[in-house]
Amino acid sequence: MLITNGIESGSVFAESIRGVRSSLLFGCNREKKNILLVTSAIPGDGKTTFAVNFAITLMMAKHKVLIIDSDMRRGGIHNFLDVYKSPGLSDYLLGKADIRDIIRVGTGNLDKLNFITCGPVTNNPGELLVGERFKQLVAYVRSEFEYVIIDSPPLASIDDTFSIAGYSDGVLFVVKAGHTGMRFAKSALNSIQRRGAHVLGLVLNGITEDNPYYYYSHYYNVYYRATMPKGNGDFEKVDASKPVLSIQEEAELLASKKGIPTLEPKPIHKAEWFKSWRAMKKKIRNFKAGVKPDLDDDDSIT
Image (cartoon, rainbow, N blue to C red):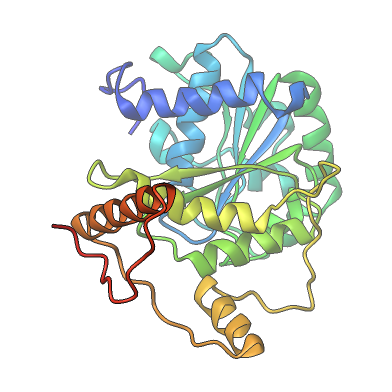
């Protein structure tokens, strides 16, 4: 699914991707973010879909952009662009190709999009990503392109992403609503931050029109708790010695320390909430009028 391939430019999908682009170009404390890493907690979050379309929106804004598929196990950028895997990243890292051989350009509407595919599957790609040739590649593309988007493997599956996170200027963390559990999302965020990566933001993917605010608050809570800034603007360092707990587990732990019961919260029906609100207003009016409260009053409204 590409913005330039049958998707209306004014669609919700396209506008959402442009919104991330605007946040990058005009936010981030006006600091230049040249190399951006796109990752997720688990497979199926839609990070490659986002990464490719994000690169396309940068291309449409007249920026010189390169997207790199660093997942040499299950890369997928070549499928989106309908090209062959090779020559790709693994070819270069194994010394079978030069840098200029693996940087290709799209066709048609994508004739300004530069890309590097993953290349053929190889043994121990994690070792290749920490080698000197990858370091040289990063230095070269940083000097040649305004923006470099690196589509990396999911964090929960392998350690390859941690090997290259240090080369990036920022991380965009993709989460698919209803697919990624809060525990996995929080654990992945904590893990990549422990290695010094700068998480720029969370991209919430796959929101339905039925209840978008539920998903937003659900996952924003995870992101905010994992990247809570201190008063000086720095991100709080995560204590690696502490286990990653879900919100429910943290609540139970807190309850055990304070000796209070832990209950699963129940949703408040709209009518019940409105009734309680009216009852509270009645109490406030009576208090202002000097009417003493009735101890047997059950807050009923007549």
